Figure 1: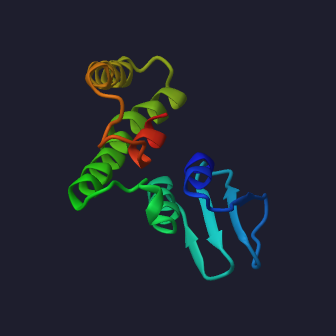
Figure 2: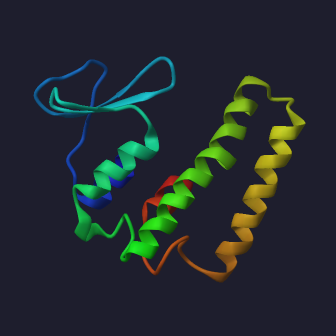
Length: 134
């Protein structure tokens, strides 16, 4: 989230308590995040927070350059959550989970093969998909 904010030129402060006067990113003990814009907007998922940050600076191209690219970025964000984040969460809780390890390995091998043919996941410049994968 901090990398996306920096790429978009969005000022984002981190804190350990809610703030009603600025944009803050607050980690929670549950492993979730709260992205708060003043006291009015609170976002709790990484993908939603990334999309919001990128939408604040459309010229950054982080959402993609075209409607098609934006759909591809959105698809990658969902895919990375379900195919990378979830197996990683399983491995954190059960390091011996062979199924999660195999699933994660298979996905990363396929992404690696894709990245041998292209520099970015979508289009010709970094997008949220690339930042999310990193």
